[in-house]
Length: 184
Image (cartoon, rainbow, N blue to C red; front, side, top):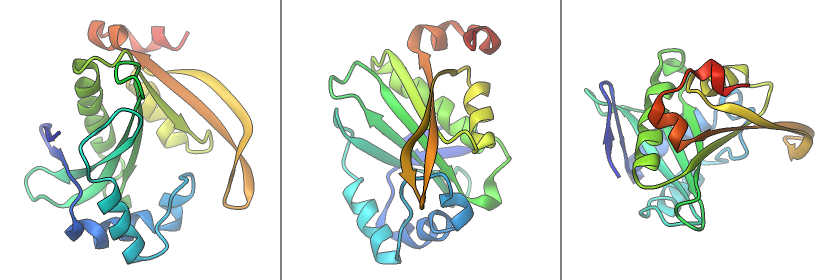
């Protein structure tokens, strides 16, 4: 799956992306709310290799987020495909700090939602630490609604962390219903 947006190209991560991926994923502020942070450049390269296969139900799949004009890697987008293929998709996104706050995450997630719903997914979800207020705002701006708040539900970097789960149905995405109405 390669996707194009007005400013971005979502395509396969390549071995040549390891240094850039390690630079932003290894940044403690970026990794603060994420479950995976590469310990070394070699680990970043191994991760790219492991997640390079085509999407398969029941597996997590990672795509590069690149600036369309230059090809520069600015982040990555994860898609966790439900085991039954049509059930849904879980989304995750990471954007390198110099490129945050420019709307790239929303643009990439919109493309991923279009792709997932076009191939038959009924539901998209995303999980986020409530302290990651920028990501919470991003998910709300896409029309996703908060469905759950799990308190101290997982151990992350030496502390118990909460987890918010957001969701969006294909029919809601297709009709373009008012995002504010979906949060009720």
